[in-house]
Image (cartoon, rainbow, N blue to C red; front, top):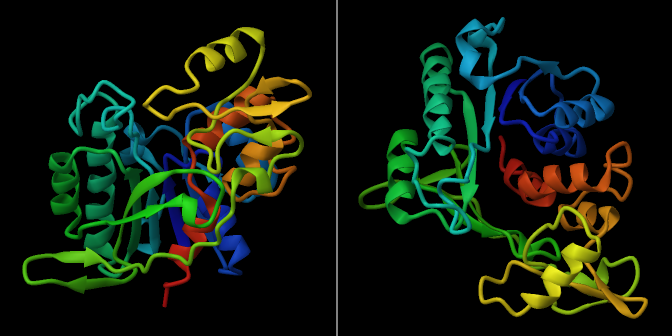
Length: 279
């Protein structure tokens, strides 16, 4: 298979293919964050970096050879944690660039497979716009089923679909709940809740004080671990575990950089669950 991964981040899609023993001939990665590229090349040196998605028309790619397109277009304008500018916001509107690329490849290879992900708190109006652009409605899966974190996401794919009376919908079954709790994956101490509600990127006195002040905030955006008589946020190993990666996956990065990539990235076990339905 030849793959294009848009907004590639830390390369979860590439790792998922590898874990499932799916052979990849060429894997093209569109990513601009330097330490994301560094981590991707560290684990898979054969990945071909093509750069900014805005320059996609200049990429040196044999488009008709592409079998799979992955896209995790920016969610900042869609998330409940953002300013809700919507799918036409300055960042989330990059979704439509993915649609342009998909359309070009489909004209050359009608059987191309795609996978698009975005945040579960996206407004229904925007979910509808995205679904009509892709010709399929998404499945909603929460990473809590396979990991120790609450991470609600929409996934659009033509890997497996079904027709309803009015629409075509993504027909990926919900994974079996493994009932993994946060205290199952902490390296030390005790968590103050059963599931983590976000991936914090670091700790420190000021950060911990802010966490303590707002730990009961109704937004549910903070989870703390009581360790050695004080509260702390999750460390790098715990963040890797929450996204389904090996403990040492981000060893070459600092904790803030690792947290940034893991916090923005895909949950590895969820992607592997979806890819299992490839024929």
